[in-house]
Length: 162
Image: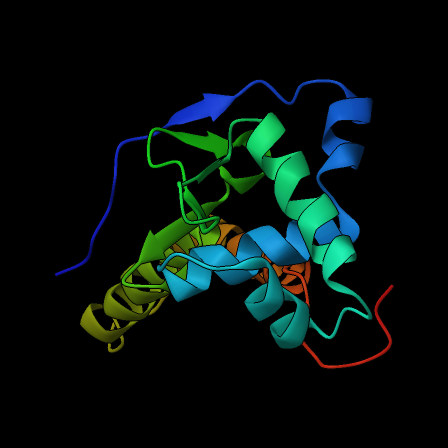
């Protein structure tokens, strides 16, 4: 099915450490995560639209310093499979695709509510509706959080990146 790897979270507890892996550094990390292959400096530069290779090199080295990436003898960078940044804990990675963990909860609660309504459709009384309402509310909360987390993913649009 999918490649799910057991990883340890890097301690990114304080705001300063989390701020260091944001913006373009986060975009570089997401690009390499989604590509699932070694990447060179120039490839990152072109793919993310950086104006110079030194900008890409700066962000890559920042991720190496944090232990998130490793660098081989050829100068290529790859994901350190034994570590991931703590800000990725709300996501599940399956074969290069990224899904918010809340998505699975939202789908499950929605399915259970629909199944309940389908089984008790003919005898849908006020009591049954009241029994169903916490599931509907929970499902709504999960869907709201899923959209909120999904929107926090970095954009890979080619544009003016510094």
